[in-house]
Length: 106
Length: 376
Image (cartoon, helix red, strand yellow):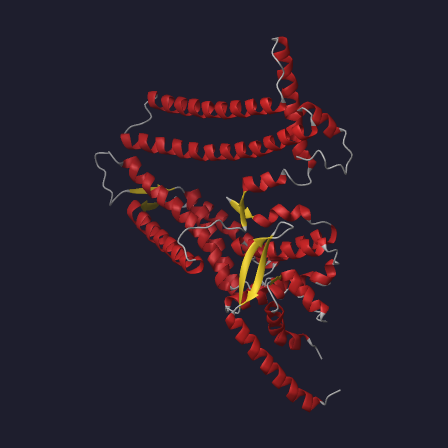
């Protein structure tokens, strides 16, 4: 069974969770996700998700020249983003609890 | 003219990172990614890849093994609305051209005894009409194909089809209009009204949008765009030594020749700083003198030949001369800025090394490949 659909469903919440830890940028977010085990996110969807989060008001973006030259976007979570994250975590726990009962804990 | 500022950093990428960047950019080019959207996305990608390169992370860990899959996801936030918006900028340019054209029509005829602004009209040449038809035909067929196939499925094949359609339409239009001796008359007033209304609407939306986004009506510099002179200027600091060598060679020759003449006259030799400052002053003055003399000669010749049959046509001619002069002046200023940047760098390196420019050039020719100490 293809797990990419499962990943797509939770990726936005996971990215929001990474940003909630402190102001960060694209590469750092990708690295954090990779470090915790999300090794299959090289689909390029990180930046469109960040754009969507910003458009919905869940994160705000600050642009600054990076130490290596290119303009870098630094993302930080907004109040709406914190509420959204809290809602995602609650929904996630609810769904996983139900799924665990159905699938049986391993 | 402004281009993507990301281009300045391309030389910093190397090997697999550079290859990945080019492939993703190529995917974008083939899938209608362009304009301000492209500039911003490519800058994001540049930051990502340069950082990964710096940290020596294998490029596959960043973009995966399937570049087109990465690129598809990367550009997946390009909406049809954003894609169509990029065309508005192009239409704005055409509107300005049409407005200026309409004003020229009026000014050139003003002063004629039978001048009537409301009936004033002119014939559009067949080739110009064919170009209009081809241009707008190309845009419309492009938009229709994108709507039918969807942005994500737009491909090089579709690009090719659109290009062929445009070429065929322009060629057919040229031939048919010429054979049929079709003359299209354009009245000045409708042209002025349509273009003025469009431009007012465009700038109103732009100002209101800017106020909503940034809180100010003032246009801020788009950090994702650079002018050509900025991009070329930054090239002088890149890894391409041929740019540095070009300046040093030219200056070295003239520096030696000038100092030989000064020695012959019993004058002390120039230092590099004195020489370059002198060259810059002379360059600016001679360019200004050249333009002024050129304009004066052209106007005088046209005037004494009796080519102006009314004050209006003389006014049109003078406006064209000054407009051309304005743009030539801007180009000259860009060149001066480029030279000024290179000049400052040459003076700085010479004074740091305790060399004059001819000595620096000699050292430059004999430098080892990995020696960056002589970089401008």
